[in-house]
Image 1: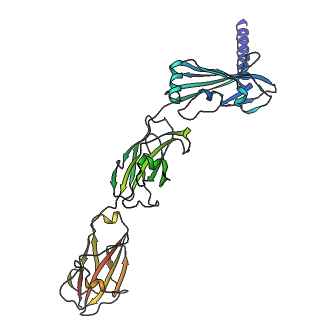
Image 2 (image 1 turned 90 degrees about the vertical axis):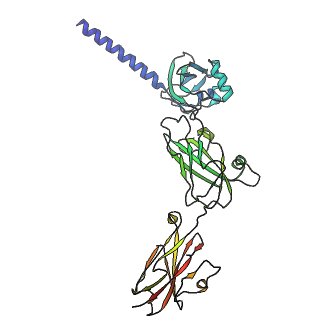
Image 3 (image 1 turned 45 degrees about the vertical axis):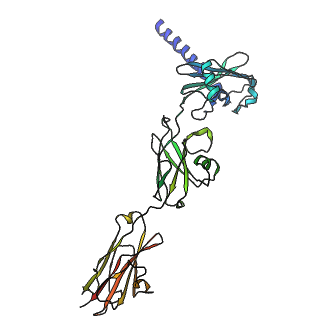
Length: 393
């Protein structure tokens, strides 16, 4: 019986103890504003909201600390006393906390902050305690843990600095900031500026309006390339451009608070890729007698050209008195080009055309010249020679 009584008293005492802790913890709810990523300053101690959950009026003050995982306490501060009405909920007015006494307890950290403007890399615990000004009783508190890193800015990879690019849709590649913030989304902004006369790349980046801006998102090292979009305006022949990558933590926010940093500024000059377009007629051959009234016309163009360009072909056919040799396109302006309107003109994007009964019928015993013109970026490409066919049943 005595043993059971001791258990009951112990359980009751523990319950009262937990209730007291719970009540005290909930009297005033403290919510700290999380500082910007990788930044923490002494004044961040007072960025908070308070909620007085009781019906009582309190005269309180704040006591704040910043501890580093390895170095221990490095900053502590005490605010002036201020009034907290019953049922109050909202941000604390920094003016109500003056004069506040905030100082560094670690001289090495103070020196680093004075020199760099922020705390060095490390794991920090920021705590704020709300205390009754008369009794010094704690009425509420909150602690947050913050990891501070100082990653390097992105490093550019390609296009290489001061290079000439021939591709109209280049891929921009860079290295991510190091070390990467664990679990954070990184937004990268590509900025391209046109470099004007007598400007350096850096001067163009700082002074000129943006010629192009694009964004990529990634985490864990992803998102570190950008394919210049086909919808963007085209680079101009012979023009030099500056480019830079800026990294932000989280979704894009054009403020310095969330910016990791900007890369170096590189430049490139755009020059059209010079390709020797070669158009070759295949079938029917150079001088060929055909019996099929619906022949297959086919031709070819330089290897892989169709992978880079949209090409439109025009098949042209006209009746002629030529009976022996193919028409030579290598001279200045061949006679065949003087034909204002061939008898047949067929548009296609294929490298072949199957003649059909819907097309002009060939005449028995007549000769015809045929060739193809390719239109590539407003340029007309013709073969070295036209082919002649003789139609016989």
